[in-house]
Amino acid sequence: MTVAVVLFTADLRLHDHPPLHAALRAGDEVVPLFVRDPGVHAAGFDAPNRRAFLADCLTDLDERLRQRGGRLVIRSGPVAREVRAVAAECGATEVHMAADVTSYAHRREQRLREALDPDGVTLHVHDSVTTAVAPGAVTPAGSDTDHYSVFTPYFRRWSQVPQREPLPAPRTVRVPEAARGEGPPSSKDVDGTSPGLPEGGETAGRARCARWWGAGDLSRYEDRHDDLAGDATSRLSPYLHFGTLSPVEAVHRARAHGGPGAEAFIRQVCWRDFHRQVLASRPEAAAADYRSRNDRWRGEDDAAEDIAAWREGRTGYPVVDAGMRQLREEGWMHNRARLLTASFLTKTLYVDWRIGARHFLDLLVDGDVANNQLNWQWVAGTGTDTRPHRVLNPVVQGKRFDPRGTYVRRWVPELEGVEDRLVHEPWRLPRETRAGLGYPEPLIDLADGLARFKQARGRD
Image 1 (cartoon, one colour):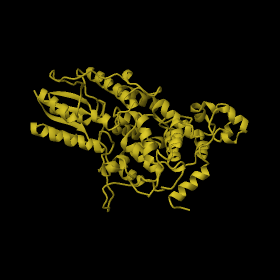
Image 2: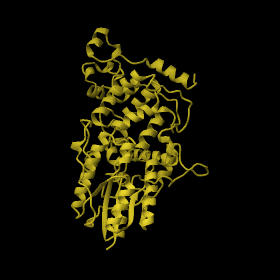
Image 3: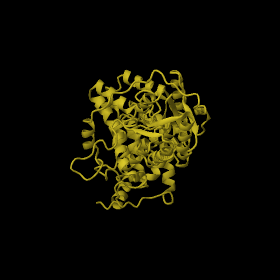
């Protein structure tokens, strides 16, 4: 009786799972294994919202495996130690897992190899599980760099890469009796979560995808994905982050659907892959500037009050405050609002992007090192943006993407009674009216913030 182990990480699904299929081909029995790694907590990635969502994902994965005659084996401890122990207990000769791009993932893989090799257990690492196209699969022609630093040419090449067909979920999974583990954790036991946190798991993710697809939102995505009030984005990012949905399957289905909306959606999936291929080549970009601009950022010591106001959604700029309050309430934020809140912190308040990125990681259920850190750098002008000096004006952007103030009023109820034409500029109201709103005055004049940013960047 041959046994193989499949180690689940950020790929908590049964549909389109190459490591699981490979393990099923390699063994008469398979151990579906997830290790609750204390290193994740020590590294600061184990935020309450993601911990609760993960608990849902593991519970759902276990239930789906049991429907197929199997079960999820959950262990706690260092990954290399626990995988080695499970392989020894069950007599496994192979371990299969998905590739990942972070420094932490690279160290984990190295430790696994070092732990398994002396026992004669082979580690197989599979690409295109957490990405649609593997990092390094496309590189710039005629260049000495190993990755693309500009999105548009990457997207052109990425779009030409032939993709594998999505794999079905297995019908049967036989797990050896010797495989011992814990029961799945409960999201109800996690304190400090956002009240509007979505349910995690492959079942919830596929249901969300089916509803969004079925409602025709994909067809309208190109026109509506920046509509703050319409809330017409897919909200699939948490499910893609935890791998309960496959990016390969998402792209395959969108291409089959066709049309401008599908193309715009595919472009967003490509952004995930773009950031992963950057981080795979430049892992230090998770904490250091991808491109140094000699910024003299303000930090916690000299901008504490401004940072606190930004975090709490009381900057006096309604669309910024709406985004920050949505983040706290839902553990998620509309993408356009992410750009606006990040631009305001880094370029209007001139605060270090790492402070904003850390706050987002503390709350975002889809908090992802590659996407989060490199999106923040894109906005801050230290990343891959070809226009690093651009500044997003929250008033102009608010009027454009929330013209009637519906998004603002949803999250900033103090402005519920303010008329449309002034909802993004409440400081233009009469003084006595403003005093009765209970809403703060602007932290800084936008012109002053822009002047400081230009001076700091050495531009006229």
